[in-house]
Image (tube, rainbow, N blue to C red):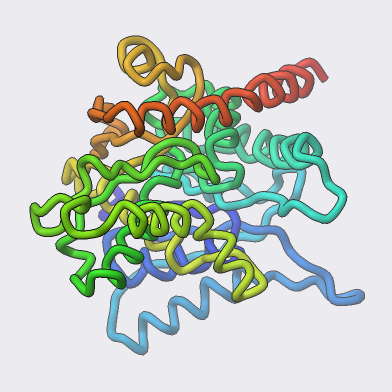
Length: 334
């Protein structure tokens, strides 16, 4: 009998490694990490096992009890048996876009990777809740939803939590108030067309629009929309501390069943899809997270200006859904 929930992190790069580390430090779950080996000449290196051992030793140094294990897997799906009985699977694995690579090439490469992972989740963790982090996250969440065939409440993309954290950070620094007292949602696609909801953003209950000029708010919105690019320009690599923390927020909401309202990329259909004018795709909206994954999709009010931004964001996601669908169908016919 399991004493604690098991969270498996597939992909132990910067984001996956930091996610595993933060989860272990919180002490709520047992952590399993999965990644490919590397080669140094003739020598086979297994970084995921070393990272798991390093995290365990960190816990010992801090006098924290925890269980962290690392598993080396192959590109064709060998080594995933330890996914068995996972309550949550976090997918950070993916292929980064390289110079000269088209968007379709990137989608094809990542769908190829995710199709292997999805088949192993179906085999070993068919009751799990899956959190998708691989970019482009709205499209990859849709791909995993289609590849797994799970109920829509058990496939969730991480984006809005991170985007909202960035927005809160910039507001906090501008007005010199703790981010704890700032309430701000960012919804829509995880990209340049994301939608910060100014009409309901507030600081300690005071509307943001009453505290900052429209010009300054627009400046913070632009910085939020290009927040990931700013970090890449400064570090030479994409962010990983804040994305990992955002994943942990989602995991804790599910594990503790605390009914947090968090913006996540989820599949929309029925009445909520009609409200959001976004039928049959995955895009960021506020959802209630609990033991069952997505327990409710919140129909958040938008003023006309925000609704127009939302429509542009949805259109940006929708135009690539057909490509994803074609790639999935082509792969399933092989």
